[in-house]
Length: 217
Image 1 (tube, one colour):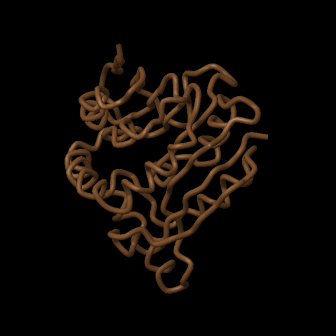
Image 2 (cartoon, one colour; image 1 turned 45 degrees about the vertical axis):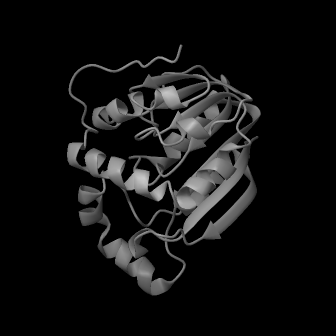
């Protein structure tokens, strides 16, 4: 049976108001392009899967039959509580783990697929996080990602820089100006597929998005 494991004690990554709002917005967004992109991205997931930043559990229902187990890492206890209620939507065992991307309590080369979706914008140390994802992913394993990144236009990019700190406060630590696609390609992964697009609907401050597949080398 699917199961959940919760960490104990006060968590510095807790954002109760953002978690509540995110849960509502995610449900609405799931009915549009975002839901379709999640399904398409996760269709190629296989074997044992590590999901980084499980959030409210929107990905769980999209994992295909070739996935045998999902270990879902989420440091925010308010998000984890919502995700725990979604475990029943998955067709396989899901384990919720209280941890951060920078320090994964997981064995090396123990996963076939790693899935970060809309989370690398909020980790404290993206380089270390990507290094940890590479560590736990077997050689030749795949990283399936969907993230928003720094704007391609100079004007919007400047606004992302100016509003980074206030946006972090209201957005649960989200940075709107990270070059996530480039970072993935330089941390032990080889980009195989990469698509850049404007997700609709989404706020201009968190556009564009990238979606793709990278292979552990």
